[in-house]
Length: 186
Image (cartoon, rainbow, N blue to C red; front, top):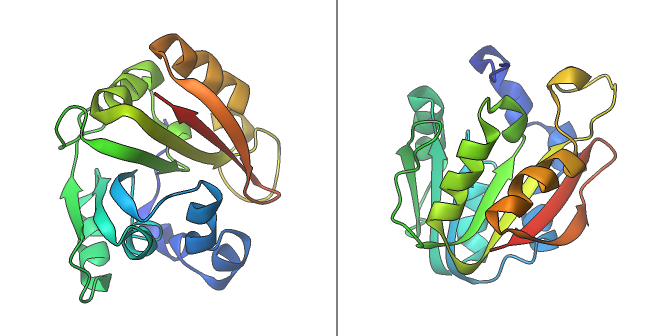
């Protein structure tokens, strides 16, 4: 499976990405509220995690990633934000309690997961009843940026994997011309 190459870390935050996927506006498209707990899986350098902590000012944000080096970068970017923390995780084991999360947010991670059903089952474990699962992924088509088309996953494929786990599809979210967004409720 393709995994993000740390040598390409500049791709995680640059003017082009901020223009096509501004983090705060993107989170608002998913209707993230000012209270609750958001888990950002594969948080990287905190591109969405830090803005989420500003939006959810009556709650908490937890960013998790499998790479310690990238979490160190995210931690250094946090200044005077008290409702945010970063934790290292294993691919199919998130370091949070059962039924404790209001929003699970995942951007450009699912195409890197080998056992997607196991990953989605872990998402279900941590989400509260009535919690939201927000996903951004690369459109499954050939384009200059992103992983090869055969490494991508379509929204239809994601729906077919999560719906048997009792996730209910809510809506498609317009992200940009390279990515799609979809939102589920448990």
